[in-house]
Length: 283
Image (tube, rainbow, N blue to C red; front, side):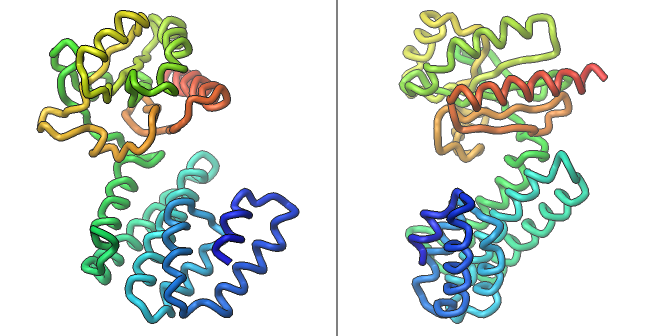
């Protein structure tokens, strides 16, 4: 059943009936099985709203604490995804979903925080998701970034308030990052004299390599080193797991778009978002 859910995640029309039957069978025949923890972990990584009923049933009825806690985390992840998608069409609904997800994670921390999960615990997993919900989700104010750029000069994200900001977590060792250098250069050039800034967070271990990339590739934007003023890595604070990861912030510093892709389609959507936010700023 777990395999069926993974294989039908795209929700293609011809797969819909098979997926519905798999979900019904999981809830009817497998709700009390320990192996349901694998389904919950999978759904925490790839949330799917059509699985919410199964997760709610596991949360309410499963006999094992680890399965109930994992179901709660997965349900919260699904609610956050739905909230982000609803933000444009129904801001009130989005806030309602964010609040429900927040409550769900707080409940996991309170009830199942000490339950072991691999080398960690359900409490630590839920705390990480709660941090992402509050600070890294679309519609949430972005975290402050304060540190040094590649030349050792002080740099602070809030100094760019009033501008549309593209935040790019990049490294020159990353081929996908190098792939979008030309489009990023063009974007910065096109946005000259507009309230816009592209800012990087460079994640190369070798500072010399990063500086060499800026010079060789003529990268026309500033980048922080991957170390904030506290000494902690910015990638840890922003929970970066893939490169490049890009956020777009509006003039108020609110996250309005994010992507972990260098595809042409993703870059087109990013540029369209920037244009729309600049129109909002002008109004």
